[in-house]
Image 1: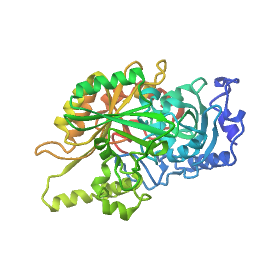
Image 2: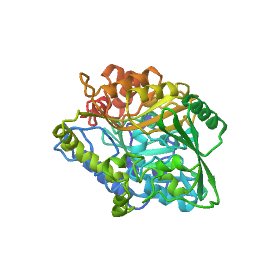
Image 3: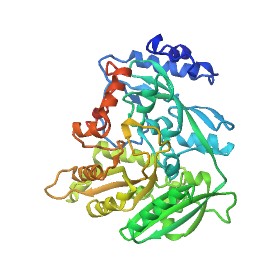
Image 4: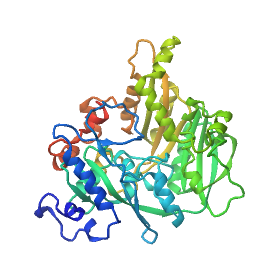
Length: 474
């Protein structure tokens, strides 16, 4: 059935007979049946109701309207289908988490080109919704190491999208589409070699301009395998340079009692096993676990490492958002209401110090995460999240709540961030709340290309529109 679905796309005149397809290679046992199950669910959905996924976990931070109709059950699409250590590729189903993928590839001495920070981020989710990490200055974002993907489109068909076949328009528009053009069922991704340990060097700067100038030089010269940074204050910034190594005189453990982000200020040099390095931020959700009291040593002793995971904190946040528990507590205590400011933005490195000045003055959240990113393939364009392929950008990640100032809108800080990022020629990720008016949104996220691809693969609007999903939260 899958062979028919992959090859039976649109019309015979649009096919390229010599294009490699999923039907020309062996399929892992059970994959075709799992795909057919999801497709059958899609066909059975009421035609007048938008289709959505039914997921028990998420790494999105925007509220959405609750719906009565059941979503597509994709819980079976969690298989690593193949790891090819010679070709350095992996075939995975869309709901495979990066924790699963890393555990499947490390025994072969390989890892994904970019491993997003949190264990439960799925490969399909990172591609349709973007991702970033400390290898992004050389490998770009996760979608840039995708070779092909099977997509369930809005008209109920399964197509094989590659950069060189008749569905190249979908391949390039899929990143940042957030499931509004289709759902990734299978992805073939590139891998890269690893060594057993990562040596970390935390370099402190008191001048942001000097720090960003050095960051640009480090990335241009390739002085490290991994680069990110942490801002604790206007005169306390750290760049962390990670380098693969075969040996370590000692290793630290931040999976339980010790806390990684605190170690940045405590150690000039540190060593981690490669797996622990990849998940160094997950145990404490960067630093956000402090909101739940999880950074107190007695609490950590009680919880144990198996409960110190980002997905558990996310569930607590989800409950808080649903029942507005924090708002009620603040109201009872007579405290001002607070605005959630949970954002990741990319700003050109030569404007990064300007953005940091703005952020420190207007949004009282500390620490702030820094992560350099450059597009991996300078000759490609990803139309729904266009970056200058010849420019190094700095991702700023800042997450928390801030007091709402008297007389201001409850979303004032987020709107200020959006305006500043646009002014500086940057881009804002859409995994969290967005407040753009519709005209501005489509200017920033290439509405012309989106509409063209949307009409081809979802002509009856079975899937939500990107603006409706990411701004109107439908």
